[in-house]
Image (cartoon, rainbow, N blue to C red; front, side):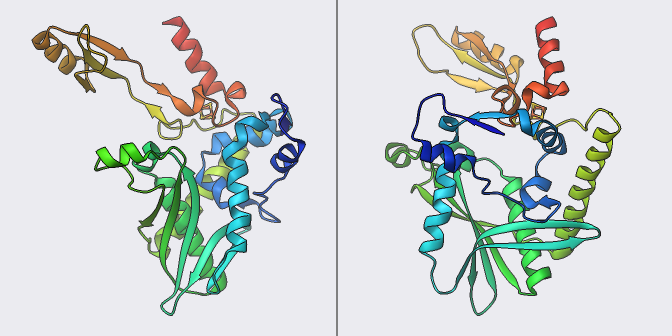
Length: 292
Ligand code: SF4
């Protein structure tokens, strides 16, 4: 991956951005790789040399790396920080680097730092739950130590004191600790094997020149089309619906009109996967949208 510097930021930041903090060591897969969609991972491996990212777009990645260093320095006596654990699953080596393992008399509590937005924090995050449970599995299987809890320490990038004071469902502080469900080990092991198999299959398909498995709507962060009922002279929508029919009904009653807010696959359109330009699934969806 080539790191560009379009805004002439200090070279130190470019050097930091160019370092591979998420190296999976001598393993075949990292935990973050297996939980992400096989299509994305395969395209990234195929086009790694041609991928480009500007250092100015990597602010949160850089701060994430800085946070790991700071957190390591401030670790308490009963904290194990930044430990990389590698497990053999059949002939595959899986590796995970755990931010914090807090050692208690009852067992280990695993915590991972995540930069996120206030909006994202209120959405379901199945990938966080899966990632932390794989870490728990690694600790139990490789280190033979009992894990009693998995958590996320969320650092909210866009936290607003004003929003917190007026909205009950808004995070009440810029740092939140979320307790996640701890899976039975058998469930986690079955999940790990299923994900490794999905990635292995995508490699076989790529080697044979076949079409890669498609990204699902969840993988593509699809935001559904919404129908907003509005009225002339009013800035905000009266109400937003999932269906045109419901919106039409209210618009007639309120003597307003319906604004269609077209849905989109955010991860593709914003190229958050980094490979949109090489992705036949996305290019096909663009073509279909143009033909409509
Ligand atoms: S562009 Fe969309 S469909 Fe293609 S790999 Fe990226 S997220 Fe998946």
